Length: 502
Image 1 (tube, rainbow, N blue to C red):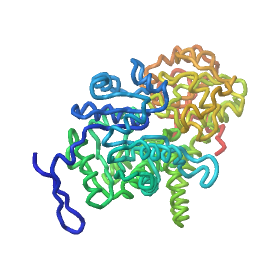
Image 2: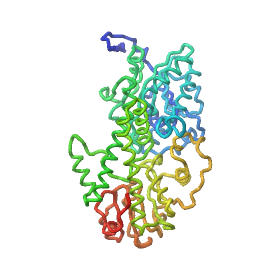
Image 3: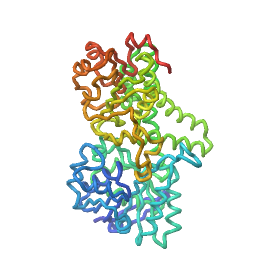
Image 4: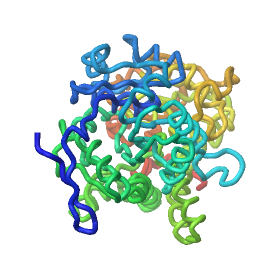
């Protein structure tokens, strides 16, 4: 096996024997949406590497070791079953696996602070700091510690200080390896990533650590798609990528409001704009708003970092992306209420879809939460159906305070108050029976194939459909007899007569 060479900024070359970068064991702290799928794919693609995923949550680890995995992701079951028990292990013995690992990925929660300095914007690094202290405490050999969670710029510096001051002579190298997964396509994204980003210190030891991690991904990712940067660039690139994507959604959603006011069709506008090769067609679908665990949290974090660095104008720019997203959700609620004679009090509204996007059961920051809460404030009776979200999760989401979702389950309210105006069904036809209106909140494929004639026949009249995802055949629905509202589309005469208060 040839020796490995590193070229430093100064131009000098360091040569290390290949054995020096050989890696045997990986441990990932955190068995969530990022840690679980990422480690499963690494185990599949690197059969010579032992991968352990650890978490303090016994129910979560038990689920990873069962036939019913704790998260729904197309293709994940198959990957886990191929590797589990061979070179992929799920365990609650955190300290043992951290002690034995050569590389420790840290994929713990970085929730938005709910109190204290930076509340509502800054990332809470409590769990990251706790993990770093534990790594320093139990380690008996040198380790590479990899940031896998989305973290603020300069987190690596803080983690380095904790590890260095508690190291007992053991050497640690910190790397930033942000994830760019999209839920619903995570396994596909891991198999064929646009890029793998690895940031490290620009020192001989830093280059060596970067190469060690690079060698893991090189089992299946072409070398040209593995990008290496300094630590701070890698940390900031993750926040920047999510901010840019969210900005595109808010841009097209801002246009959707103007389309409704002028009679333009947002689908036609976004198609025309997307054919420009400089812009491209992705993330230009208008909807009720973006959700998920990253976009809002990362932008708020970006805002806070800008403010802390004396850049108020930049902070204000990114704040506007979130303001438009909130505006889009409230605009949707206003449209529902005003269309139905300005009141939904005691009216049954069917909510189809609760997850923030199709092909996932994840409800973190889903627009459905704010829309449902807005309708509940007007005393609506909600009947909710989502093929992958449980009643317990829906009730929990509707009764929790903002940002509580991102804390570990044992720190969330144990018995959330049940919202009496909400019923959850496991059938779309049951949800819509005797309803006055239907709100489509997630773009599940099955919603396009429902028998809407059957649904119409069993609804109160006039019957309304409010398409928050622009997935329905509007003409067909109107022919059946529905009054239809679809975001950014020319309005029914009925809706023109009852303008929504923006």
